Image: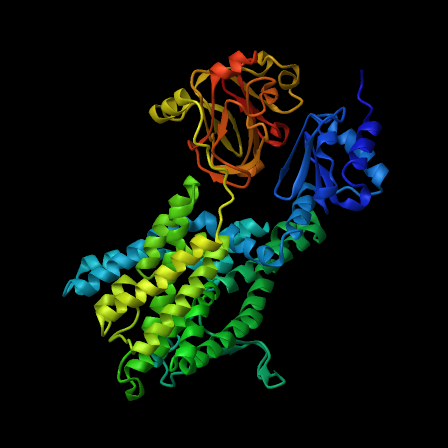
Length: 639
C-alpha cells in the first residue's frame, strides 16, 4: 500500500509541538531535518511509530526523521504545505541549530572548528620549540651551533607562519576559497612588513626600514585626510605574526564578500572579478580597520600590564587574563615590558613579569592535563596529553585552542590557577634574569628555583583540581559487566583495514571483521531495498565494531545496537548490528562512545555478543550503510 504523504507529514507536525515549535526544516536524500525550539514538546515514542518514519535520532541540535529516498521529498513538500514554512537548505538547518546554542558556545565554536584540524602542526612545533629552547639554555654554547639554528627553524615554522595556517583553516570553516584565505594569511605576514615580534624594538625598526627614528612608518593611502584626529587610510607597516583573532576576522570578512559576489556577479566575469574584488576589499578592511583596532588594544594591554604587575592584586588580574591575550595574539608584545624591566632600576634589573606569565601558562598545563587524565575519549586524550606537555614547556597554544577553550571549563580552571600562582609570585618577589621562557625552562633564568617550584605547584595544582571538579565529559562509559568473550576478543584483535566503500569524500573501512556481502543479501527488506542508503552487509567473525573513518558520533541508539558516524565531506554512515535487534533492548551490546564524541579510524566503538543475538533469534549480520550515498560523487561499493 502506497504511503499517504499528507497523513505522514500531518502526524509529524502534530507530534513535534506544531508549527510554532519548529525553527527550521529541510531534507536530504533520506531524512527530514528539523530544528526544534522546545524538545519537551516532541512525542518521540509516537514519531517512532508513524507510518513512513523508519527511524529517528537527534544530532547537533537537529531532529532527523529517516523516511527514505524518493519519499522524503514528497513528505517534505506536504510538511511545508501544512506548516506554511518555506523551503530551507541543510546549511540553513545547521545554522539554525547552531543558533540555539548559548552565546558563549556560538562565539567559541569557530575557534575550535578552525584549530582542531591544525592541532598536529602546532602541537609538534610547540613541543619542539620548548625542547630546543631548554637545550639552548641548559647546554653552554649549544645556542651558537648550526644544529641549534636548524632545529630552531624547524620548530618555529608553524608559529612563524601561523596566520597562514589559521587563514586556510578559517576559510574552510567559513565557506571561503581556501587559496584566497592563504593569500590573506600570507599578506598579513608579508616580508614588506615589520615582524610583529620585533615591533617594540627601536633597533629592529631602524634596521628593517633603514631609518633612525625608532618609529614604524605608515602608508597613508588617502594622503593626510583626517577624521576626528585619525588619518583616514593610514596603515602601520607591521605584520601579524602570532595573531589569531585578527586573521579569523579577516577571513570571515573575505568569505562573506566572496559569497555575495558569487551570487551577484554574472558568471561570464565571475572567475576574475570575484577573486580580485575579494582580495582587494579584504586587504583594505584588514589593514585599515582590523589593524588599528588590534594595535590600539595591544597598546592598552601593554600599558595596563606595566601598572598591574607592581602589586599582588594587579598580578592576580594579569595571571587570570593572560590566556585571553594568547587567544587574541597579543602575548608576544609582553617582551617589550620584560626587556624594560631588565633594564630598569625600578625593578632591580629583574623580569617580574615572567613568574606571572609562567603561572598562567603552567595553570593551562594543569587544566589540560586534568582533561587528559579524566577523559575516556581516545581522541581527546591523544590531543590533550601532548598539548599539556607543550604547555608545561611554555608553549600553550595547543592546550588553549585544542583542549581548554574547546571545552571552556578547563580554560576557566586554568585562569583561576594562573591568578593564584601570580599572587604568590608577586608576594614572594620572584623574578627572572632573562625573558622569553616560562614553565619548566624558566628554571634556567629564575632567581629562586625553590619558590618557583612552589609557584608552579600552586598554579598547575589548583587548575588541575578545579578542572576535575567543574568539567564533566559527556561520554558514555562502558559498564563493568558484559560479555567476557567480547572483551577478550577485542583485546586480541585489531581493526579491519579492507575498504568496503569509497567516494570523492573519502574511503570507508570495514567496521567489523567478517565476510562482506552485497546490500541485497541483507536479510531485511528495508535495508536491502536501499531506502535507508547504499552499502553492504558483513557476516561478522568477531564481536568488536571499529570506527571506519575519522569522524563524529552523530547518534547512538537507545537500544545500543546501532551507531551513526559523520565524516569528511558530510559522509553519514549507519552501522546497525544485527537485524531486528532493537527488540533486545540493549542486552548484549556495549557502546564505548556517545553522541558528539570525535573518533579516529580504527577506534573501538561497540562490542556485541553473537551468542545472545542468536539466542534471541535474530541474524547477527552487521549492516553498514552510507545513508546519503546519493549525495556523494563517485560512490562505489567494494565486495
